[in-house]
Image (tube, rainbow, N blue to C red; front, side, top):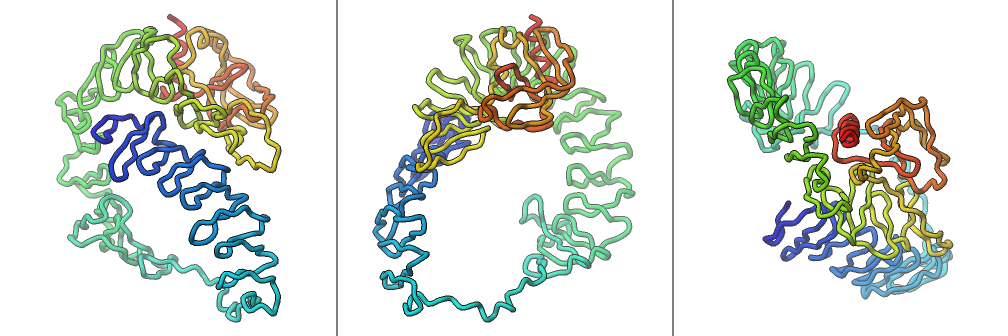
Length: 476
């Protein structure tokens, strides 16, 4: 949760606009919104003109003062933003009027003349006399403002961390050209190269053969004992004498960490640094643990919810309200307030009078072309929104091998029926009657699917975790 105008809000579902104050717009995720003053909007379907929110008249909408115009068919001309209908696609603004760039010229005084040799403002451009001097020159390499030869020299520049941090020598890190045979550059800090110090640890040179030094996550530690190693948090420790969890040291060697504490994996489950008692159907949901057989608990992308109905569905990390629409792509799920004439295209919610969608790709609708009837929505469904009956009926898991307009080829196929999983033939083709319905799937990625839909999952970090969840849920 974040704070806006002294109130908590969820950027997954709402937007905070900050302009001469702060204001929360509910029902529109910050992942896809922009702000028009203190009001959030969806730039796919609307445009902000001088702090005035307008519906887009076309996909190529532009602002003309506070009014939105069709960039295909309209012009905004002159200092007073005069709205003009284009006479042809070749017409452009000439001060407050329009002219044809193919047959006419726009003069500085605002007058329009037919193109001719006699017109003073239609003077034909002559070839550049200095064209020979504009030929492509060999590309010059610069280190800051200094040119250098990359065949013999290198550029030393700071690339990580605080740019204002001084080098171990006390000097400021700055761009410098150097000879790699005589110098070594460690993150913007240039020093003399010596045989014993030919490696970098952050901004400090050191050598692998040096005694008593240890490089952990770009920080060089000195005066270390033999046998010390780097912990996962980047702290040196003695693995035969202690365990380091995060930055906290424990005197017991070989311990398993959960956050800063040691835990017993056979008795305890670790959920993102928080310990909980382990039991047969207990699983993690973010930092919380829950029983997957509890019908009044639902995990949505690491957020655990208490349900009021078995009909509640996830959309991203939140529960979808009864009037909301959930749009899902391979990357994310986002909720939107339902609107007539709008549909999902992956995680985007688009106005079908402006856009068309095929296989998850949006294309502008041109009004001169006869509009196609609305197609089925192009989106994926979420595995964790399937009820137990749907989840434990016949469902497949396979790796996408090939995608074409006629079908999707899956390999390494498993058919799951409740607790039973059987190996299917090496290759299965899911025939596609509507090529625009399914998003363009990623070759080499694993998906769950049935005869009708393809599913994605944001609750588990691996396919094995998801498969274990499905089989556990269906074994109850």
